[in-house]
Structure formats: structure tokens, C-alpha cells
Image (cartoon, rainbow, N blue to C red; front, side):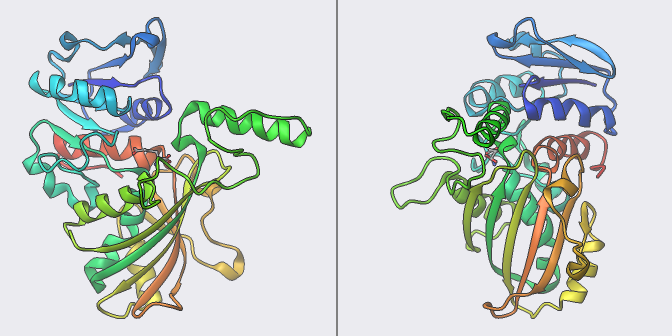
Length: 335
Ligand code: 11C
């Protein structure tokens, strides 16, 4: 099969190529696409250098799967074009996620929704994916009523420029030199920014709304109560989330640990007295969602609290997109 990758030179695009190399998809040809700015650049796939082409309609001829990670503007413009040429687009931007005609999929949770796609499938936001990967198996056993997710999100979620800004700003801070932030509105080095995406008139951020709205759609629970506070932290990769949830039935933390350990794509690291709990250093480069600190929530009825870490570029983006491709074209996602 022929696979196009739009946004191939970006951080997520690069991970998409790596995930495609390891996937169960019968990939014969990869076509890396980008904007005019990417002209002349190259990417590596299976050890070969491939030229990145500025995206044009004719490039989607014969493409079965088109993975998009070039931002909402290009996704809005090009996804219908690619779909009209017969490709299935798996779009990593927020452009199509809440469109009722477009399934929003985490294959371990709602692969069944792929049955009604019309050429475009949306890949959820990274922070939503990792929260639901642990909440869904618990929901099946105990019945989810409410959850709160407070996030600690790495700068790779913003992109390559933010990774460079954290490096430069940290070096400047340690050297006692001034640093002018250009990617973030405030200093990111040795700091915390409770600000991801723009704020609405009530002061709720875009990233917080994504957690609420995307969770409801993926779980098929339009009235699920969700609280969220999303925070950018000065780590390079992996998002952490402190999650508290309440259920119809009282969860037993020991049984919850077993349920989570048995769920494909989740790994339990939970021996806090031995300092065993997931950190961003544990999650980086891994496809699994890591969970630990599983304990009763002290303030919620039938509540459970936990700490969840995942690589935001892999399960939070590229890997989930390729798994959607596997679910569509090779009979199931490989985790
Ligand atoms: C971040 N979650 O960490 C964002 C990145 O809607 O796909 C991904 C944005 C999105 O900043």
C-alpha cells in the first residue's frame, strides 16, 4: 500500500515514519509531504532518503492511507481532497475531532467507530488519549461518573521550536543571562505555565476543553462530568497526568491494578514506597501508557486516584494514528 505523510518533517511526522516502519501495515511506498517551506528537505524511511514534496492534489492518487500532522489549517484544506481521491485520512490536528461525521478514535477503546468513517478519522489530543487509556478499562468494571485530569505537559507537544526554546532558555537561566521567549508567552525554563492553547471568555483553555469534549465523544458519554487543568512544564518529552475519578461502584485499588495491567497498551509501575512510579524519563520512547500511584481518592465517593505518564509524540500522536491505520487496513492495531 501507498502511505502519504503530510507534515513529515515535524516532530510527530518523524515519529509517524518510525511507527510505520514497525507497523503491521503492508507499506510499499511512503510519500512524505509538506508545505512549500519543506521543499528540498528529505526524511529517512527504512534507511532510504526520501524527498519531501510540497503537497498537491495529484500526490493523493493511489494513496490508501494519509497520515496528517501539519496543523489544523492544512488539515482542513487537504483532508477532503485526499479523501476524495480514495485515501483514508488519519488526522492528528484538532480540525475534525468534534465533527459528528468524523470518528475520533483510540483503537483500544472505540475501534468500532471506524465502521462509520467517510474518509477522515481524527486522532485525539495526546492528553486525552493517555487519560482514557487508563479510565476506559476501569469504566468497564466500575462505571465512570466523573474524572479530573491535571496535566504536566512537555514542550514537545508544542513542537520543535519549543524544544529549542527550553534548551536555550535553560542554558541562559543557568548562566544568569537574559532570554527572550518567542514560543511561549512566559519563561518556560524552571517554570510552570498554566496555559495551553487560547483561553475562552470564562478563562478555560483550549487544551482543557479538548479533555472534556474529546473524552465525551470517544467514550460515547455526552454528559460525562470532567474537570481539567492543563499545565506546560519544562520537560522535553512525555506528559504526566494526576487523575482522580469517581465510579458507580467502589473501586478496589488492588483489583484496579490488575485490570490496568491486563489492558493492552497499559503498563502498571506501582510500588511507591520503593520509588516505583512512572516518570517522563520512563515513558520517553515507549508506546505504552504507564500508570502508578493507584490509590483511593480521599475526597471523592467511590473514588480512585492515579498518576499516568505517556510519550505524547507516540501513543499521544504518531503511534495512535498508525494503530488506527492498522485497525483499518490490517485487521487490528499492534500495540
Ligand atoms: C500540547 N496537546 O501538548 C498539545 C499538542 O490538539 O493535537 C497537541 C495539540 C492537538 O501542547
